[in-house]
Image: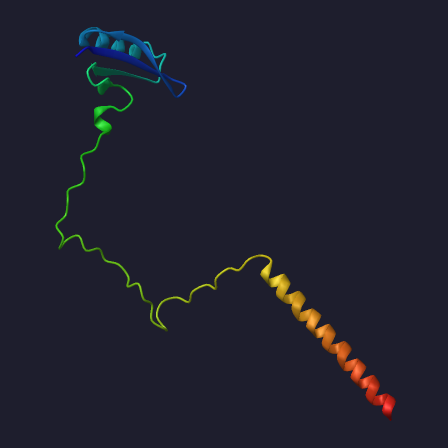
Length: 140
C-alpha cells in the first residue's frame, strides 16, 4: 500500500498542495519551515494511504497549524439520566399566569383590505338609506 505525505498550505482561505513526500520527516520539516516564513495562514501535513486493490485512499492529518492543540477542548462530561432533567417551564400556560402575550402579527395587506371592505359596505348602506328616504318622502 503506497503512502504519501502531502504538505498543504492555506492562503486567502484556499488550501493547496505545496509538496509531496514518500516519508514523514521531510514533510514535517518542510511544513515547519513554511510556517516559519509567515507567508501562509496555516500549514498541514496529510498522510495519504492508497490501496490500489480497492482504489481508495485514507487520509489522516498528522500536523496542523490551523488549530493549535491548546484550542481543542475535551468533550463535556456526560450526565446521568436523573441529573439530566432540565428545569423548564411547562408547555401549557394557564389563564391569569405569566405576562400577557402579544397578538400575532398579521400580513401587511390584511388590515387595509378589511378597512376598505368596511368603508365599501358603509357607503352602500348610506346610498341604500338615501334611496329609501327619497322614496318615502316622494310618497308624502
